[in-house]
Amino acid sequence: MTVEIKDKKLIIAIEMNPTPVPSASGKTLVVASSHGNQPTTATINGKTIIVGVNAYIRK
Image (cartoon, rainbow, N blue to C red; front, side):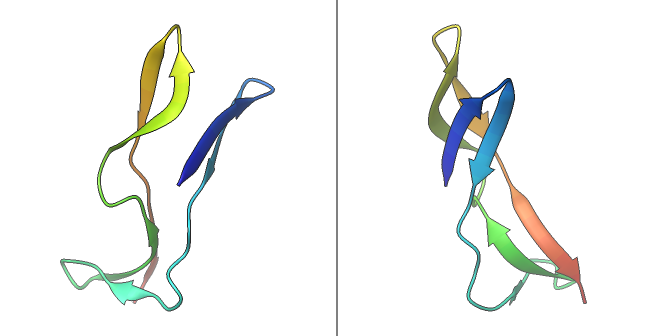
């Protein structure tokens, strides 16, 4: 996952799974995930931005 601040926007790029995988509950198919909250190299006022992302589709 890469994160940057550009033109007052937080830009997040995350690798997609080659094929959707079932979520832990089995209700959705995960297409991309940060696997929990992750610290990034982006900062605001010297403090690290933490990002958690889940992208999924319904079954």
